[in-house]
Image 1 (tube, rainbow, N blue to C red):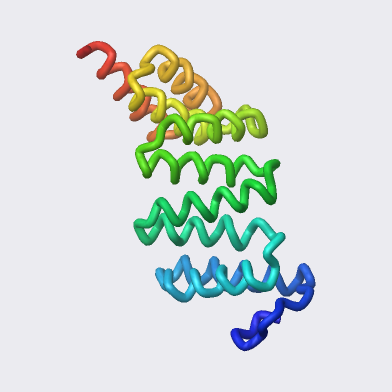
Image 2 (image 1 turned 90 degrees about the vertical axis):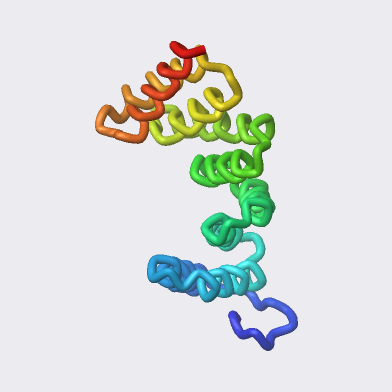
Length: 169
């Protein structure tokens, strides 16, 4: 039951959960972030063992400029579903947004173990490594990113920026 008046969450069937997830995503896509956040909060209350309420709530928190809240929500999602490269990547992004590169790096590496051919994750790790001053390792990660997605402007831009920074240091 997703009612605001329930004191104790009742078991929720998967179809109900999926409908709420889709409702929240639709609100997010329309830019109605507070309403989407409320849907995901209700989902977390009604189905606390479902990682999507935590993960999608983290997305909203990040979009609202609250990386600390996003990191907390993503961390809970990750504890519930450590087989999701998406959640691991999101947690890494939130930790990077907080300036905690040391905490972010293992999440990108965990995501790559799950999806080793994912160019976006390689690019995120490369960006982190470049920011941390680990240019040589960052270049290797950028190469992986552009190998797996040669059409990614973001990956090529990051690669070029890292090479440029290396040549100017």
